[in-house]
Image 1 (tube, helix red, strand yellow):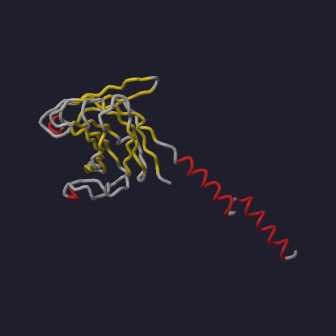
Image 2 (cartoon, one colour):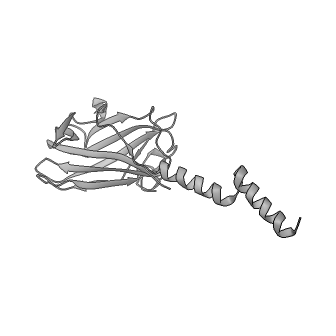
Image 3 (cartoon, rainbow, N blue to C red):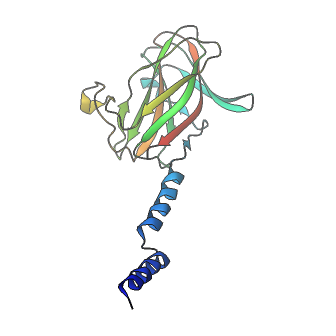
Length: 198
């Protein structure tokens, strides 16, 4: 058998048994594409944080034009913020990705909001930078929080926004906080999801 014939036979066998680099690359590409779909987070199942850590806040899932929205109604109180939480310990989220949602301020003044995560076996608290949501009758603002960013505050950073999330693959809960102080108001949230990074 000539050298050319031997080489051709080896290439054909490689394709048949699946060790050809081209075949493997195609398979991995399809797998990666499948994992890059957004992971929706249900708007149901949220609840107020413990009363000693939050101003009064209530939530209800409403439907507007066939689309579900989470309406948070908060009241002024003794703390600086009103906090709503959702347990996530039974939902597997990617270690790298972006939490994104749309928010509408249904109050009468601009507010600042944050997103916080409790992670790992000890439920370590990490809070994002403040995000301003302007007073608006009908406008939704796009909110995006990178899970790998180094702008989270925690006990480890002495409560300065300069750290990353520890144990990002073990997110136990997500919190939405409205820094309302003594003011009453409402925030509408919709399209809440995590977009994994490639």
